[in-house]
Image (cartoon, rainbow, N blue to C red; front, side, top):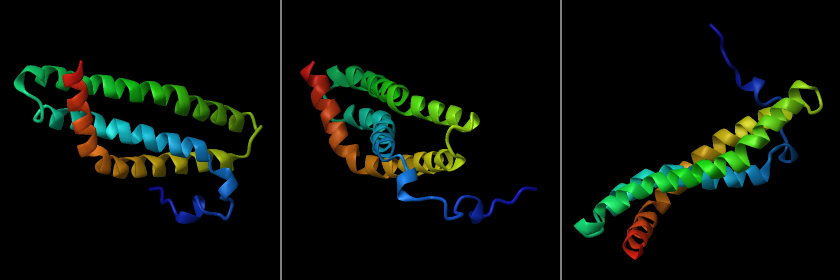
Length: 132
């Protein structure tokens, strides 16, 4: 059995400069959109007249599609390039560890922020469905 202790991740090597700040913010936004996409569309279907319910329910796919495109354009390439640099010994391993910690914490923060955006996003999806 393998035990992971806290000193594996926190050896004093982390610093503010090893954390990718822009990727942290972008991943918070993308995670919030992913989290709120389906739930806001389901709730928005309760806010619109019966004629618009199918339009609203289909909008969750569009919302998650946009979030997937954002993830593919901004987050995934950075992880691939960073992992490649570490494997080729062009960058220290601490940057990859910082990136991993950043991704986990930004997804958690994005999920928490999505709870605040849930109701406004549902009203926006309902308005947009009635607008088109």
